[in-house]
Length: 336
Image 1 (cartoon, rainbow, N blue to C red):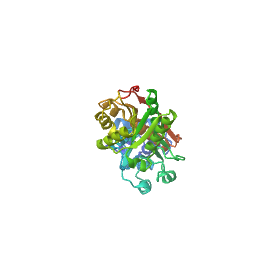
Image 2 (spheres, helix red, strand yellow):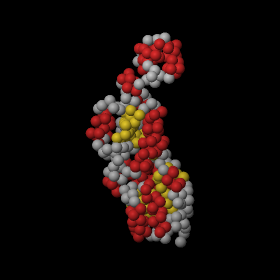
Image 3 (cartoon, rainbow, N blue to C red):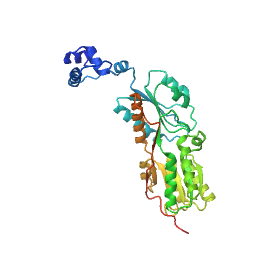
Image 4 (cartoon, rainbow, N blue to C red):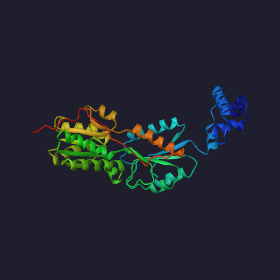
């Protein structure tokens, strides 16, 4: 194993000079820095992670806080996590994944130690109990999601309100006059999870603006629940011709349920969704959808955090505009 003394000998400098060149703690001439860099490259030296952490007072670890609460669709959460981990590695950082629901206590336990340099927080509620602590921490943080009051915080997410509006506006342009939102599981709304609440607001705002009859229906994430919601919709809204789905596991079961009840998609019923593109494309009837940009959100969250760690200024709010892709599940309303 190549040691720092080997690098120093090869570059013709002292070990402390090599250490200063690596940490940047003291000014080093450009010529000396070049010799050290060449020696490191030629010898294949890699500073020990623990030594780097001691030298910089940093752990080079980010915390990703993802409480796996009831109603969360884990495959989508993992898409965000993979993006965060992949991007963090480009910045020579590892990621500590915190999945337990511990609220302030869990955040404080991690933040009060030298375990992590900064935090990324997911599953944000409108009135999130963690906000006060995040505002008071010396360690920087980024929230994937927007609480009702985001003052003093750094937040990034898809513009879920605009996403809900985009789905309704697409259906309205096709002539649909009665629409429904099949939403997240009930417990997600009971917690006032921010993204779900904003989809509802966007859906109802756009429906009211266009003069559409509309309704909102939370749905458990199962085929049986999808069937029950489909039956309820046809019973309560017989004129229904447009549906927005914001619940990834029931997208295909819901289409199946409607067709088993005698409605063809898109001949009798147009269906849109807010979900990952790969899901929308894989359904038997490919679904018109607003993409869930998990890879981009995760990457940009890490970039914001790296800039904050470097002392840079970042915007408090980053909202990604919705991107709707038309597929086979929507068509103009057929007049009776």
